[in-house]
Length: 167
Ligand code: HEM
Ligand code: HEM
Image 1 (tube, rainbow, N blue to C red):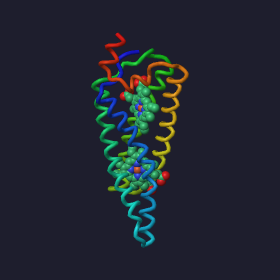
Image 2 (image 1 turned 120 degrees about the horizontal axis):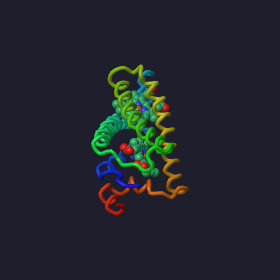
Image 3 (image 1 turned 60 degrees about the vertical axis):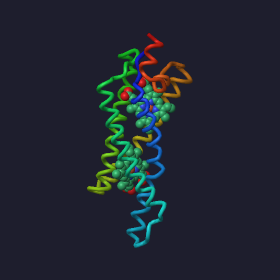
Image 4 (image 1 turned 90 degrees about the vertical axis):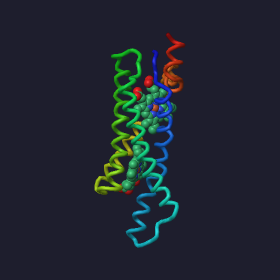
């Protein structure tokens, strides 16, 4: 297996990987903020801060994932054993990640600034993303602990260095 990702692609992968969990920590604050306002009460200061963090971090995640998608089209990673079923499932999950994360950020944006009616789909989207992340982590653990292959290295060492050492 050779030719993973460029340094920019790696940086963006790990940046998004650290930002997505923040969305799960801050998401609940939005319901609490809206509930307080509907009850005629002042929402807690910390909930309002988290609401802002959720919106702006979510928008940034959507934009970063969009940049990743463009980079992926311009610099597609080389994958090993093309055609094997595991390779096809992994590829499908990776493609689905781009759609799910960008779609989730888009739905969140619409819920906040255009039409709140879409919010239940945003909540469902968050559960789907949670399942996808769990699957992604399980696959990474399998590659590292059972197959003991170089998959994790592909996401740690940039393309040029990796290729040079493995040609
Ligand atoms: C929410 C968090 C995450 C998201 C959205 C995410 C998304 C993705 C996507 C879309 C790819 C495919 C890249 C491409 O081919 O263009 C990928 C690859 C990869 N991810 Fe993640 N990831 C996340 C977290 C993690 C974490 C925590 C780990 C490690 C424990 C990890 C390890 C990897 C590895 C090793 C690959 C390379 C697979 C390969 O090319 O063979 N990811 N990730
Ligand atoms: C990929 C990025 C995002 C993820 C993973 C995410 C995740 C979440 C989660 C986990 C919740 C709480 C769901 C629950 O109540 O159990 C939530 C709620 C919410 N998020 Fe996001 N979010 C993202 C982006 C955004 C963006 C960009 C915005 C707005 C600009 C936004 C606006 C909202 C709103 C309005 C709610 C409240 C929905 C409701 O209570 O019915 N989200 N989000």
